[in-house]
Image (cartoon, rainbow, N blue to C red; front, side, top):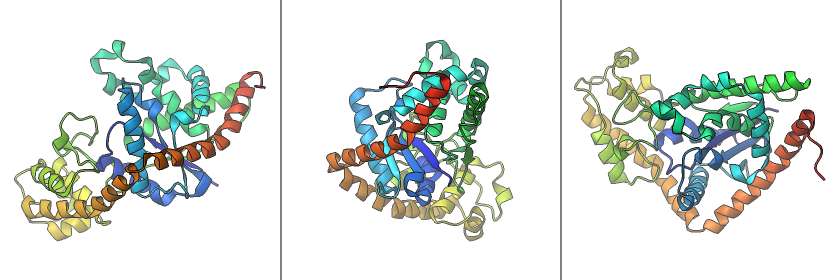
Length: 333
């Protein structure tokens, strides 16, 4: 049976992009111990985090995942740092991966920018930890955004080199799962950039906790162009902001961009934005209510995450212990 693994950083409240591009797609993948979803706090500290904020945001992210439909009784939901197998395998993979492979990672170049000499080494070797996150469970399917495809390719390179170096077909091949009509949700202020929690402008994104008035205001202010909506998809080719809003409405109403344009083609953005805001509020309001309920009892959220970590460790520990034996480490105790 295929095992699914994916993770999300606790760097603030999830955005609509996180929900449509990742979280919503995880819900139908829940399949007991063969589906693992992780709040990746180790990845978060590749850039400095305020410790109190990191703790709070980790719990909030877990609550958001549950509110969006991940059921700790139907999948394994846990915090990355609670399962030590991730650290152990990450170091082995850091010794297997080649500098040239990591130097080709476009996400590192984008995040480091011109200041790459001053970023943390953790940011540089981030993909090795990501490979360990997945392969510690022998996971074979990873739902990710298209921007993470290169990291999955690197994880497969690391797995293949490990298998070759140590003479055993131990780690499996990983398949990235890129899903959904809005798999890559773009900024409301710039349709060429991905919607992001780290964007300095809160107007660039819809947060899952935004109330109805805030959602409506952000959608009204969303960048568009003066032309009416086209009736066919080809009319959106040079219109990134319009294409983004059409894709969001299609995803929120479980339809297709073609169907959205069939209904709204020829109309201006005023009425279209009203329809989009209403669809967003209808979908997000129940999630917000459930998040509030969960965060009113943080001890219960923490207990659920501990149980998830115990289940995750029960899978990962034997796999990583075997990897350590293949490397030549003496057995512990």
